[in-house]
Every structure is written in structure tokens, then in C-alpha cells.
Image (cartoon, rainbow, N blue to C red; front, side):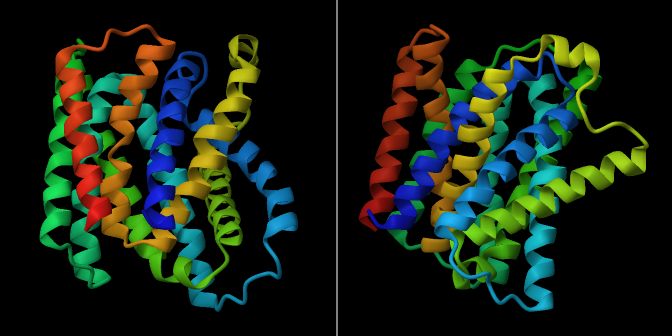
Length: 292
């Protein structure tokens, strides 16, 4: 296992923890405000990280800086807001199913724009990971939703995942050439700036309303911002920096399996045979990816 592959798997674990936390927080605060708050907290955490580990500021040209900021705007300001909205409407199970679109989107975009190719063993790993995640997710979905709300949630969910894929492929070449922690901070700044601009255009306050603050679980929010945003973003971009975008995307799919395991531990959801089969398939696919 190389560094990029290890970071990609760890980022899936961190993001899975974040999804469970964000589902709880989404019951008390609007998705866009939750997105801004957690990213602003993560950006604050990145300041000492840049000072301690960032080294000199990167010498980015105007085009590369614009690509980095636009990647943050698309992947954080827009995609994450859509994702959290869809998560509230569909629940974690259906969002787990929609998450299967991420690696195909990244593989196609990487094939077209980065010239990446997958070998036979990697393709087998992709099939096993996808099959395992589908087994886990399909068996977990039993959510009642009105037809119109369901269609809207599905459209928002798929759109968010497509934008995440576009954002990471867009910044991949710049990321490979620059210091990781600086790139995380700049991309996060682009996301926070985009969210503030969105609130300004809507003429809305970006901060939680008094009613939202009264019910907001601040320790949970702080923990979610650290694990689900700061840590997962560093690990996710690190995975894409040190291995191909296609391989990182496939390994990121393990987040659905981690959600099942975390839900069993922290939410007391039973581990059915279907879930265990999905875990076994996914881990077999990861093994194929690591052996390739």
C-alpha cells in the first residue's frame, strides 16, 4: 500500500464519520449554513497547520490559483451544499447508493482529461468495490419520500457527486506539484468565499438563526468539522496527490462500508448477512486495488 492509497482509505473513514454527524446536525440547521459553519471552522483549523507544516507559500501562477479556488467553489460551496440538502431529503442509505456514481464519474473524467488508465486487476477491484457498496446500500434503503421530493433529492445528490468529481479532476495536476496543506487551505478558502458570496447574492444572513443556535449541538459540530471536514479534506486531497485520481476514487467508495460499521457501533444498527457480504466484497476489491 503506497501513501496515496492509505490516505484515500483513511479519508473514506473520516468522511463516513462526518456523514453520520452531519445527518444529526441537519435536523437543526439549514444545509447551506451547516456547510459554511463546518468549513469556516475547518479553515480556522488550517491556519496553524499551514504555519507549522506548510513551509513557504506556493508560487502559483494566476491560472493555477484560479483553478484551485474554482475547485473549492465547485467542490465545497456548491457540491457540499447540494449533498447536505440531498442527505436531509433522502437519508444516508440512498446517499450511499448515489455515492457509487463518484468513481465512475472520476474514472471517465480522468480518462478524458488526465490520460489515466486502469489495469485488469484494478478494474476487477473497481467491480468488487462497487458490488459490495451496492449490496450494503440497497439493503439499507427503506426510506419513504414523496415522489416529487424523491426526484428532487436524487437530482441534487447526483449533481453534487458529479461536481465533486469535476472539482478533483480539475485541480489534480496543480495538486501534484504543490504542498498539500497549502492546497487544502487555498481550496477551502475558495469554498468559504463561494458560500459567503452565495449568501450575499441571496441577501441572507450566513450565520445560524437564533432558533438554529438554540438547538445546535456545538460540541458535535466542532467534532464534525474536525473529522468530517478538516481531516477528511487533508486525507482526500492527499490521496489524490499521491496516487491516480481513478484509484483514489475507487478506494474512497469504501466510505459506505465504514458507514455501516460505524452505524452498528454508534447507532446500534444490526449487521445483517447482506451487510457483511457487502463488507467482504468491498474489502476484496480494495485488496485487488492494492495488489495491482
